[in-house]
Amino acid sequence: MARVDVVVIGGGQAGFAAGYHLRRQKVDFVILDDQATPGGAWQHTWDSLHLFSPAAHSSLPGRPMPAQPGQTYPDARHVVAYLTDYDQRYDLPVRRGVRVRAVRGDGDRLRVETDSGDWRARAVISATGTWSRPFLPAVPGRDTFTGRQLHTVGYRRPADFAGQRVTVVGGGNSAAQIAADLLLDGVEVTWVTQHPPRFLADDVDGRALFAIATARRRALDEGRTDAGGVAPLGDIVAVPPVRAARDSGKLVARPMFTRLTATGIEWADGTRADADAVIWCTGFRPALAHLAPLALRGPQRHIPTDGTRAIGEPRLHLLGYGDWTGPASATLIGVGRPARDATAQITRLLREGVSHT
Image 1 (cartoon, helix red, strand yellow):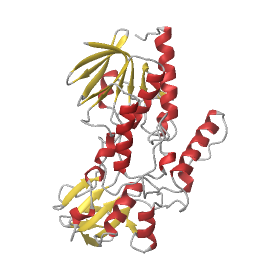
Image 2 (cartoon, rainbow, N blue to C red):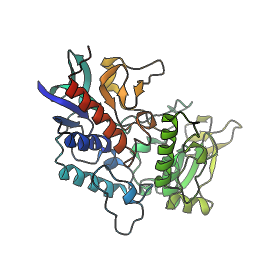
Image 3 (spheres, rainbow, N blue to C red):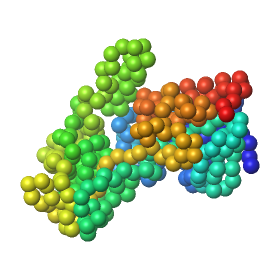
Image 4 (cartoon, rainbow, N blue to C red):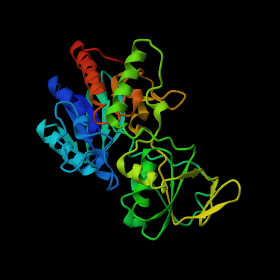
């Protein structure tokens, strides 16, 4: 069984940000990643996906993302190339193709059990993200629909749906972008949302969203009134393809249907629409099954944290899962600060020799 001061679980953007700060602190650590190559979830997105922000505002700590020639907003392939370069530049100690099965208490250490051997660590950073846990709602008739059903994670390109009728479900960025991608390629799309879609102003992108999220966190930390962050502004960033589809009159949402039929969808008033495929852009849940042995979940199935630190297990930090583990921490630019804070706390724990039994 290998021993190390810190195990980072997950080699995506959050794991790399943690690795950067651990390297600067001269901590003995390892990053365990179940992917064969660098890039995290960015390796598995649809072909046309672009960032919400320019490259200069999409960087991990210590290494500015270079601009992508001909693109204001870099695409996913550019992000993968950037993360690959980041890995090499900082010589991060990544063990690839390693799947973590469980994390358990083991005296003065935590035991990280994997499919290729176990590790004992004085602290663990879980940075597994959400991409591997797509959420599908329990909609009546879902098991009777005879067409193709897939989640956001399974969508790649419009050509896969040429000549088909596609229903896209969801009122967030992924749904709007995928619906626009299909529509602009001539695919027949029915876009359905639980609530009327709310587009942010056309000049609002990731730069503004990160600034607003950071200001909100600062206000909450200082005891000032919660202004609601980005929520009052809208839900969908009007990236160029979404804007083009919306302004052309093609990207128009209909209310959520009540059930699936064998051949399509049906609304409460009996109106039907045929569909050859349904794409569920219905979000994700944190991939935290490996932490189940620690029994940290609260009554809402949520692990209570103070910043990134798990309240029930001070040797464990959760990084990159969303605002509950740091403002905008699920974004490239947003994960740097909570990663720095997490590694600072871990470094203090290591130096003080604090144990938790």
